[in-house]
Every structure is written in structure tokens, then in C-alpha cells.
Image 1: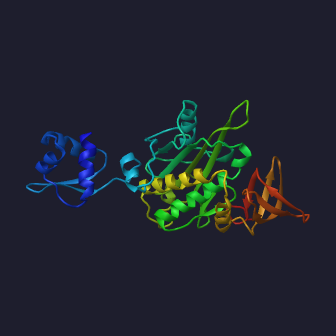
Image 2: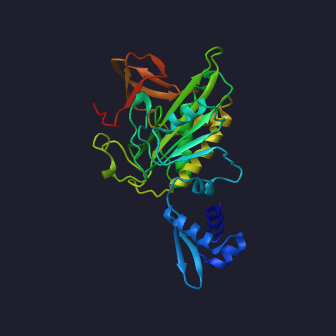
Image 3: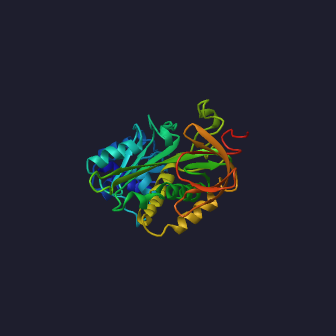
Amino acid sequence: MSREKVYALLRQRTGEFFSGEELSRTLGISRAAVWKAIDSLRRDGYTIEARKSQGYRLVAAPDALVEREIRRYLSPDVSCPDLHCLQEVDSTNSYLKREAMNGAPHGTIAVANCQTAGRGRMARRFQSPPDCGVYLSILLRPELMPEQLMGATGMAAVAVCDAVEKVAGVRPQIKWTNDLILHGRKLGGILTEMALEGETGRTEFLVIGAGVNVRQSQEDFPPEVAEIATSLAAEGYEASRPALAAALIEAFYRLGRDLGGDITPWVEAYRRDCVTIGKEVRLLWSENQERALALDVDGQFGLVVRREDGTETTVRTGEVSVRGLYGYTE
């Protein structure tokens, strides 16, 4: 496609001018095709300067979740053959579950500029406005039993922390089990969903999704989450959205390779990042709740707590509130 060829040449020498004649000769296309490609790139948000007698130069690329920009940031050894870039979708997890049922392969990635029905745990809505965050999911088809995948959510939280740190220079913390915390507010979250084969009970597929708030100001958050949510920009950190998407893809691929193997390094990283350990917590069991002290995270990312009666137990499901976060102060 002429547009991609023109873009690749301009990108090679960002800031330098290419004459229309040089672009035409190098690419073997007409001057009219060059002009159409330039016009198309501009409509996609690329800033391309044109000067008489000098030609064209690429000044700036958009902070857009489009394939060409994401691939620009991927490491050379990461091919990512199945990358679906969506302007709008109900949720990237739901999209990949539908793709999985239609035979999409292991490692398929979906990334969206906007989600109309973004979800977190317990079917809670995850605010996903356009041009503000990175909403990305990966489809995995591990040949493993479900009990071998208990650590997937914890590993995903570490993977997202790795990606944010790589791109923004700041490492979030983790509130057990799947919330990403920056300066005491929620930066993002993880949602892991699994489908099983009916006859064997083995895993048919696993979808891991992450949402990270990047560009929102505090005023952009709706009233119901304004007191607890934040973004990288709101906390003073710059981050390219396509660069963050690429970093997430690489981190999720590492996760996929390690599933079912030795996850000790992931657990150790989770412990270092987990803001819950050492804090008083409130455990919500169905309609009941009780206070406890969070002691540790075990080898499968279960939360080890000491209850008020002095006994210790490991929490693997349910809700855990941490004193000092999200309004829990009582």
C-alpha cells in the first residue's frame, strides 16, 4: 500500500525532508500517489510539513493505538502476527472470546481506543473513554489444567507494572488481587477469563485483559470514581499510548511463555509490588465481612491473612478492602 511505503520512508528520516520526486522514484509510484498517501496520513493524525522546493517531512506521529505505531515500538524479536487494533469495541476481552470461538490462534492481541462496556471483576464497569487509555487483551491457548493457571491474574498484574515502568518511568503498586495503584489511587485493572472443554475439563482458552488510564485529567473521571481513580498524566507522568501497548504485548507474551512453569520470579515481584501486605484489610464473604491483617502472598498469589481470632487463612476469591485505599478508613 502506497501510504505505508511513504510512511516508512518518512519515519526512517523523521525531521528531514523528502522531495516528492525522491519519494516517487524510490517507491516506484506516481507523484499523485505520493500526494494521496501524504493526505491520508495527515487525516490519520500525522503532522507532515510540506515546503516548496524541499518536499515533505514527518514532524509528529499521533498518540494513536493504530497498528503501524504499536509495531514501531515492538522489539525486533516480537512478531505479534495477530494484532487487532479497534477504534471502538464493547470490551477487548469480550471481543477476543468471540474470536476464540471462531478459531483465533494463541497469542492473538486486541487493543482498543475506546470500550463501550469495559468490565472489571464482579462485572463492575471499567471507564474506558476514547483517546485516554490503553485497553488491551491477549488470547492464550495453554495446554494446561485450570488449577495450573491459578496464578494468571497475579502474573498479569506484574506484567502491567513492568510495562508501565518501562514506558512511564514509574512503577505502580498492586492492591490484591488485580488493581493497579499509583499514589493511592486506581490506575488500572486486570480481568482474566477462562473457557473449559466440557469433556476433559482442560483449558480451551484464557483471555487476559488490562486497562490503564494514561491521559485523563482528574476532571475527566465521572463523579462515582473521581475520588479513587487516577491516570499517568494526572500524576505527572508522560507516556505514549502505542509504546505502552507494545510494552504490554511483550509483557503478556512473557507471561504466556511462563504459565505452567516456575512462576517464582513473578510471585516475588508481586510481593514487592503488593500494597496490601502488612495492612489491615476487610474481607467480604458473600453478605458477611470481617477484619484481618494481610501477612503475605503465597506461591499461587493467594492472600495469607490473620483473622481477629488469631487463626491464619488464605484468601483466593472474594473482595478485600485495604485500610487507607478507596475510602476504607473505619
